[in-house]
Image (spheres, rainbow, N blue to C red):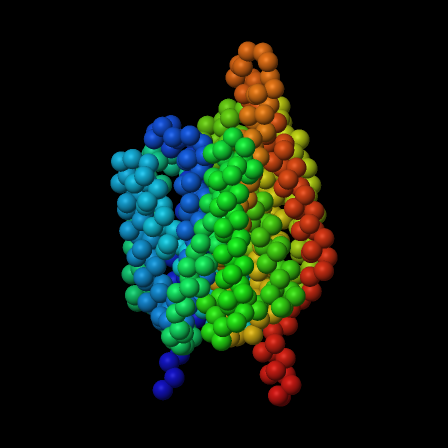
Length: 479
């Protein structure tokens, strides 16, 4: 007898668990200044609480396709949420920076494996014609959680202290696990694919080398030109190349890179990567600038970002319905155009810019991101046949933390490098005003880079078309 699938209960279960897991991607962004002072570490070191989180997620994502096909949906969800809970408890009880970083890394293991499990299940549960609406509803979590993280963080840090960034999450994670035990059903089949150890090693070295290389650039005076940084990047690039070549020769690849032969998938993933870089980098740099030259508290900086964060999450379901009706291009092209305008504004900011301007521009940034992120990812996955869903979701989700880590690392490296250059060239007494001017100079250069990649995103958006699943074509032909 066939078991009836309660798709609504499954969706609610996913949304509860994912909200608090994804929230932690950006929850510490505004708290980085506080944590730097508490644990007496420098900016590049404390940055690892953000980039290290995304590094671990990126390393684990390629393995997610294998795990999704090896374990039931129920076992995977409950298992990864339990891992996330353990990391949260360790981080909340930290007595030194290494212990806090360890807790964050364990949290990242849970988060990194959770998202591919959910995305694959949703693709199997819902047909392409309604996926925009469903992905938009789930996007309320994916986009709202990390967007509201800085705001929530600022309020918690100023009122309760940094430990409550973790301790307050524990009851909700426990509730998510209990809810899943009662309502979550299995979706898809367990096929137990063959494990290729060499592929896992190559992907781990490749992704880890690239993210570590870019992330450590800020710790070296010569930045990206440092011998250590270039070595890590080169080793990572070579390992990834060998990984890709191996996957193309395998009958059962760990990660089937043949998904990139589908044009809309490739274009959608590139758009997704660029937007993630712009969003994650802005969520690091803007709080630093607001608390630096502008002199706002963590709570005030969070409140300045709050309207944009709220709009970002609330617009996701709306963008999902518009995507189902009009397709991706009519959303992505205007969205990319607006982001270009935002990057131009950020490349010219200074301490005299009024608060209302920061609020308005951040609203525009988050609105345009909602018009690009979900449509680009959903349209990309819609073009794939069902047997490639685990691989398509694994690759797109692998690129998300990598893009975030690289975006943050490159932006912070440019910010740090150009600020230091400004100070080195300044011959007078280095007052607080001079340090503020140096940071403004660095921010300008960081956003000039952001502007260049956003122009590329606009050009790509012009070539995106509404995807049609090969499985749908087959079904129509057979009918």
